[in-house]
Amino acid sequence: MIPPLSKAGAALAALRARLEGEVFAPGDAGYDEARAVSNALIDRRPAVIAQCAGEVDVIRAVRFARDLDLKIAVRGGGHSVAGMAVNDNGVVVDLRRMHRVAVHPESASVRVEGGAVMSHLDRATEPHGLATTGGRVSTTGVAGFVLGGGTGWLDRSFGLAVDNLLGVELVTADGTPLLATAEENPELFWALHGGGGNFGVATSLTLRLHQLPEFSIALLMFLPDRGPEAVRTYRDLLASGAPELGGAVLYLTGPRAPFVPGHLVGRLLCGVLVTYVGGEEGLRKRAQPLLALPHECEVVSAMPYADVQCMLDSPPGLRNHWSVEYVRALPDELVDAFCARAPSMPVPSACQQMLFPQGGAIASGPAEYPVAFRDAPWAVHPFGVWADPADDERALRWVTDVRADARPWSTGAVYLNLIGDEGRDRVVAGLGTEHLNRLARVKRQYDPDNVFRYNHNILPA
Ligand SMILES: Cc1cc2nc3c(=O)[nH]c(=O)nc-3n(C[C@H](O)[C@H](O)[C@H](O)COP(=O)(O)OP(=O)(O)OC[C@H]3O[C@@H](n4cnc5c(N)ncnc54)[C@H](O)[C@@H]3O)c2cc1C
Image 1 (cartoon, protein in one colour):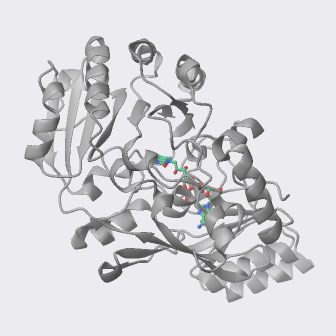
Image 2 (cartoon, protein in one colour; image 1 turned 90 degrees about the vertical axis):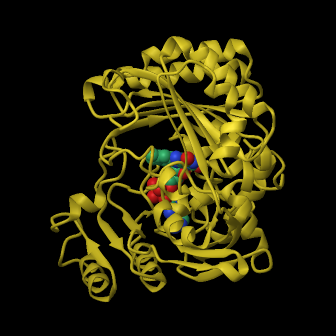
């Protein structure tokens, strides 16, 4: 807590007076709500939370923290599983009030403020029949997602989110605003294609948009003993290579949904989701081998992409622990190991044991960016989300075991946005050794004191 009569207290009073947004400190009404992040396992107490309303507020908040030598965490959507959006006793530069979105259909681009979440972006582009690669839920922060790489239902068609990044407005460690594009500050622009929040506070991002006149899904639920057959069929379907097809396998708790019969609600099920950039008829044709398998229930329909984005949303405030393993192949042996592990997942819960395809425009995208996982055809992603503390040990063990089962096929690379703090080696595996050296030189230029360290941290060269 900052004492009111100290130099820091005076600076805090000045920040409160000048910020267009709002400042929260311990003891303020709303402080506990402001410090909470998506993962209920994270419980940190910042000295100051500056909820910025615009770029000028961000500059003020960064300079306030620097003047008082306080550590800075930057908050976008608050989805980092390790709680990188908050710190203890430091300053949180919180962008959640900055969520304006401006769509420019004439240049097929969109400018998104640094605190927008996926639903802000998707709902704004949808009326124009346009979209860009987003995450698989509606509540993830666009900035944290994009700066780390960005994968989702559209990536096999439109590439990773970073492949669609056209520009970033950034406030640097000394509180200077600057623009990073292919022409201006190009080395910094390159580093923002996977280097995360290491280089400054992104106050806006400009992204390329694509035509998406139609989008369809087929979601089929299988009993667990049919899982291996369903997963193999899905694998073979995706191996045909059509980039318009995507989706995932998700072992999950049978959800309370109109298409799920009552006796399946709350039970472990194997869900297979096929997403399709196109209409229902085309999807039915392509997904025929899967639709022909005996399954318990299904939804096959054209659906607005922004609605599909909400299908896997779970409420905030649940306990989270997840990890990922990128694999070079998906042989039957791995399918069997993956399916055999599912019964150890806590059920009922919001956990998902996921397997999702890459390939398509991910694999053929620009190789020069620091996202090392691009080449892997599949990712195994135990996504632990549960409510009951009594499930903690079980959930953590399950995540470890799912990863261990996949490790014999691992490419060794990882997507850092899908892991928490798993140590230095994983950061190297996420960025690649050569890229890391180059990133460290960019870090030295733009953040030599490592002010932005609550991230998958790159040390200045
Ligand atoms: C339910 C759920 C589903 C997910 N699904 C997907 C998915 O489908 N695909 C995928 O790729 N990822 C997914 N993720 C992971 C997600 O991409 C990462 O957790 C990402 O870092 C979240 O960004 P955020 O802004 O929400 O998080 P935060 O916790 O706010 O931030 C994460 C990191 O980014 C930095 N950061 C955030 N905003 C800014 C900014 N404006 N400027 C500079 N740095 C910033 C933070 O400092 C921190 O280091 C999912 C996460 C959750 C919880």
